[in-house]
Amino acid sequence: MVFDLFPAVLCCLRVDNLISSSWTVVFTPLWILDVIYYGSLVFLLVFSDGKLYTFCKRLLLLVVQIFIAMKLDGVVDWSLVMVLTPYFTCEVLNLLEVVLGGVLGHQMLVSDSIGASVSQTEGIETERQLLVKAVMRKTGLTLLRIVQALLIGVKVDGSLDGVTWWRVMTPVWLVAAYLFWYPIKKYINSTSANRLLDAVFTAGVIFMLVAPFFLLADRLEGKRLSSFNIVMPWMLLMGASFLFLLCAITLAGAERVIRSGVQPTRRHTQSSPYRHDYVAVDMD
Image 1 (cartoon, rainbow, N blue to C red):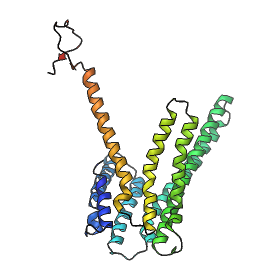
Image 2: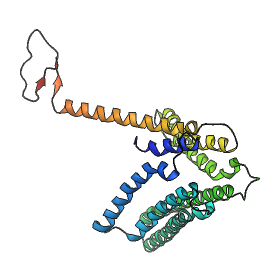
Image 3: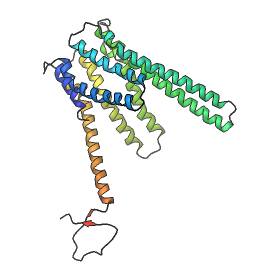
Image 4: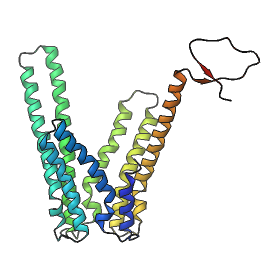
């Protein structure tokens, strides 16, 4: 988890001109993560009957990382839209998978409903509605990602000089609104006594996730802002997650020790009767 911060820290240093290394060198932690990730994919492909199509599709994301590094270092003189072509290809394939999977799933449910009883038909109809909602949600999010990447590419290439970055990042704002609707809906539908606290905590986490995009748009519009200030919410969120994980591991370990019968004992003037169900350990 801590290692995941290294690429962001190095990128911030490079953007703020605090280091002068090439972007290929700056991306070194990212290349290390890629070696681990794609090495595991190759292992699954060779030894676990992995799908070649899935591997090739994920390989497109590695290609776009290499293209971005080459573009930033000036090795290639391509437009950003051309650099992002592998990413667009990957997202289009994801979109086709979602649509085709939804169509096939819907046809299977329709065929199952033929000749089914009333109770079975109601269950199939519920599954059909859930399938339609899931397909629409995933299709919408995929389209927003494609449109956002395309708008950024066109803006950087100079074709949208009269459009502000706040308008260019409209798909991000739509996704943020969708995410903030989740705790509201959860608060309305929940019957828990702590539903308000739960909703506020969830909204706080979502705010930390989307805040850097607002700060980034502000900086791109010309405001003097350090790159570290932009990614600070993510760093704080990751640090808090690491602390929560550490506390959970510590508490789980302490609970396991207690359940195993290894417990601290207090000194008494008279020794307590011997028990066979656990072994007491004097911690003094």
